[in-house]
Length: 532
Picture: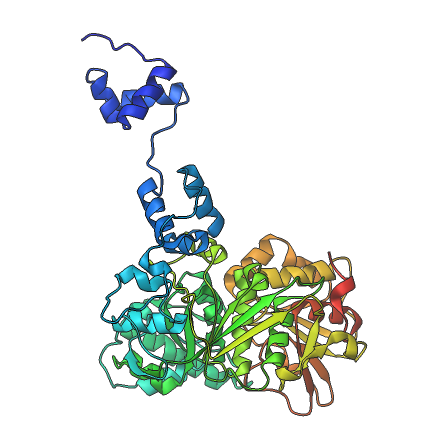
């Protein structure tokens, strides 16, 4: 057999440009095996040919349809800047010379627009698009009664009550892969009843074949669902308890339902609801030092104290929201339950996409509101002059600046839970506690939101830092610590403590930064001068 002449690097590059694959290059060279061509490439530092992720035809088509980098990028699940780079790569620098139908707000009688025409103009909110997808129709109208099957059900609260309500009404759960189930934790002090309820939940999960059952050691149910990739944009999630609204952080529609309704869904029934109105909340400005997502959420709750968004879906947008991490959006959406909203979601963007890359358990299609959506209310908030906030636990709409209540003595502080139990929250507290010690007159509990958060804090040395500083670290997702308040004492919390709130005590709600700074002084403290 005649020995093949080894091509030069320049020859390999020319062949690759013309024939693309190692197999075809080998054929051109007279039947050289593909593995040998690959070996030559590696020796001459010639990378393997790969097709671009998006073809010129794809980018050109979207650019001519939308003429807008952000909307075109959302169609592909990439950021505005990424789409801009792709069209520059293909030399698409000018705006489309002619507008296509979906870029016009025309509605001629009898005209049927193509399916993609409704992606920008159709006056549909995110809620309308989500429900229309589930019903497999083009659109639903606000106020219309619909019966839908959700994409996911979850039990951040009252899992045992849902299991009891399910009873024996069906032999099998409607779709075990669409159920995220986690037993509850005792917040009443009656551990025997809690243990029995949790045993029933475990038995139910085993008998009914629940695919995504997480036991108590995993932490907070909503936090676990977020971390494990169960929540995806454009989905409808039904959950028990107001904590469910937090799942709107990933641009899905998460609503709180009664345990009996969720049990009915488990049994194969559809869920009936009226298509809700939507309100748009644009939050702009620049957050000052020490101002967290909790402070922004308390400010929003205060502004919406009139109840104008009750039973509506809030769509959060604006520069402040776009700069928030997914964890911060989780806090913002979760605390929005205090406004009486039916759901609260943050619009899909590059941050959402990056968080879900390699994490999402199912494919998804991002959903964004039409440009001409008719909202029930439009709000604009600027946070340029916002300072750290604090509020009575029973009335978050009465929030006020921390500076107005500084030096008020506190004996007990709990940092963690649904709205402040992520690693970034613990890191904020660690930066404040570093090199200091919790005041002798104050008890400071740290509660990681999940086992993965706890392990990350352990690896990064935060658990040791907390312990050396005199704080107490509870097991993930627990509600430990609330029962230790004595009558007449005052406490700070960063989450809802649940149903069992001690009598004759005063409890305030604050951010992780305020909680950590206050622990150092046993008094309500502005965190602005602490940490980095």
